Amino acid sequence: MYTIIRFENVEFAHVQVEKGGQKSFPCGFDSSKHRMEKSSLRLDLKKIRVAVAKSANADSDICGICVGALYSL
Image (tube, rainbow, N blue to C red):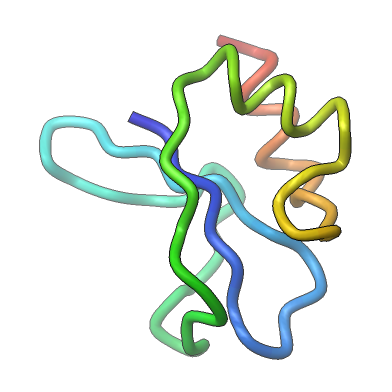
């Protein structure tokens, strides 16, 4: 499962990956150092790719490393 997440005072949205109950960011972003800005947007991979293509997620860009990880699957 993939989730697009935004944090306060963070320019880019990040893609959180959940595998085997463990959640992490492909880019190694440390979410413990930031507060959530808004609720995350849970999407399937195809929809996330569409969101990336449209620069969606509340007018925020998505971290380039996260995007690369999505397309490398």
